[in-house]
Length: 130
Image 1 (cartoon, rainbow, N blue to C red):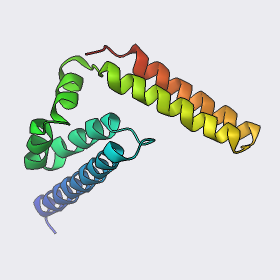
Image 2: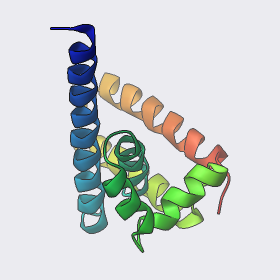
Image 3: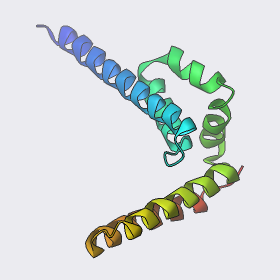
Image 4: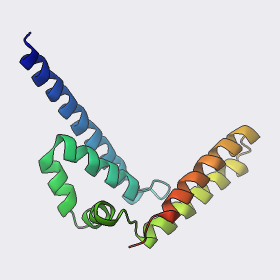
């Protein structure tokens, strides 16, 4: 294979990988619309990122979607997250951690998951609100 052929194959596989990741995260975002413990906004933002790298048509569709489009636009322009999304995400993290407590998870699991969720909540709450 020539170096040009290797570059084309590498570009094709990278683009395909980005497309697959975009669709996976979009499906997770759609699941988050109907499942109460699964967030939607972070998955939409990640799906838009991968779509912009691998599928311009899918990226445009996400950006123009009436539900997903505003979250993507706010994130891209101001790195902002809506107050509703922040509140819902924090409540769901507390509920998830509380469920681990009620189920009697080991202290190590509670500590690690609690620190992780606290870090995520801190990051979310320090982003601008739109």
